[in-house]
Amino acid sequence: MRAGKSVGEARATLTRLLSRAETDGAWNIAMARTLVRAGDPTVAKSYYHRAVYGGWRGDTAALRMRARMELIALMAQRGESPER
Image: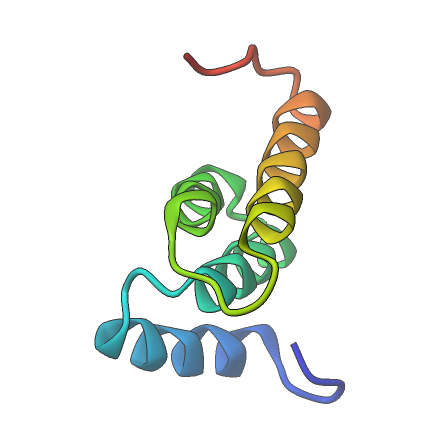
């Protein structure tokens, strides 16, 4: 999220972007991070999953691993067990 942009504005922008490309990994992880900042980690988890399995430009394996590690960290912080 850019400096100076509110969580609400970021969420609205990402919603529009994802409506055009729902499997974009970068936009999904951005939405997940925005939702965590907004205090909605439960919904954020679904966006992390989409980021893990979504399409990426660049080093796909590394970017997917980063998304997976963020999801794991979020779950650990909330005291949740690993998903299967």
